[in-house]
Amino acid sequence: MTVRWTTPFSFEGRIDRARYFIIGVFLVALKYFVDWSIAARFHRPWSAWNYFVPPSDVSMFTLAGPLRTFYLTLWLVAIPFFWIGVTLTIKRLRDAGYRALWIFLFFVPTLNLVFFLLLSVAPTAPRAERIHVEGLDVDDLPRTHAVPLAGIMLAALIGLGLATLSTNFLGQYSWGLFLGVPFVVGFVASWFYNYGTLHPRMQTAAVCVVATSVIGVLLIGFHQEGLICLLMALPLALPFAIAGGLAAHHSLAGRGVSSPQVTASLALFPLLLFAEHIANFTPPALPVVTSITINAPASTVWRNVIAFPPLAAPHELLFHTGIAYPIGATIYGTGVGAIRRCRFSTGDFVEPITIWDENHLLAFNVIQEPPSMHELGLGEIHAPHIERNYMRSQHGQFRLTAIDANHTLLEGTTWYQDYFWPQLYWRTWSDAIVHRIHTRVLEHIKAVAESQTRHTSQP
Image (cartoon, rainbow, N blue to C red):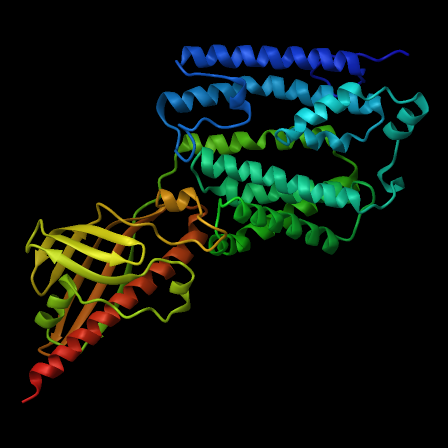
């Protein structure tokens, strides 16, 4: 039997199991040698385990300096190996009589090794069967439930891998994570679902929603994320997952895009995550201002601003979801340089005073802050955005304006950075949370100050 041979970078032609295995083993050995050599130049250890388990010294941390250059070099060097691996696998699938859509298994860690071994022993299909598979029209394929289920699970695994790369490895919650990953997940799930027979768009959208939801379940199950943050992300993720699904639906309907072309396009997506990481976007520190009118003199309000007694347990639903809330404040010393400690449900904010204008303005920096929340989930949650405080307070102030002798306008301001993108969406959530925290403190100061005023005014 003649096997048509083409260049390694071409998707055309076929390759038998013996050549596929030999070339595959050679490429793996060559790739390991190249990676080991690069690691040696950067004075880094390297072993085969690095392809399965990320090194512990980069997990949960943003790469920077030589370490970033090291991993970027590894990724760039991997591109030609990756491309050849895809083309050879497409040819092997074609030779064995399998549909090209199974190329997606190439992207599943660990499972891709099993996939390689199976293709290395799969015999060449009879010519008639190869012609049938290669010339098959997508509308002639029967409807099955196995392919949609496989597509959903595979899309979820790909999405989980990309999400882990972005959050745990690159330490970023960016456009690529919240918009790009859902689009890829929806595209893959829809491609599998519609490859045999085009289904209605509403059914396709439902499959994309299910695939995206499975990722959420996996993140909770692996203790990588909590329920509240996932619910907050859904309004962003679901529309883009559906958009990706409809894009795949349109591509299959027009028959203008082949499986190899789709595979090659999706394979480039991780480069976008690395590009965002290299860009190292820094969000601005923007203010959130909340005010309240208190029926008490400014001097009474001032005493309760610099330190106030413990607050009652919160009744707001927001603070029962795990969001940190204030429970009291103390101060050590007076004037500039004094240390104010604002106690929250998750720990203390340490706030050295920078402006002490008695009865008028109290300003401070934030040099230490507790986690922003206790996530709801299964066991202890190890989310980088919580462990590294991706919602960071920079400084704050209380401004007092005497309306008259017995009425004071109290204004609380917090400047903070939100390391989530797109900023327009996430700042809407975080601004509302900061306002609610301000309101809890200001209402408590109001109640205490007005109580003290009534008490002193009684004969």
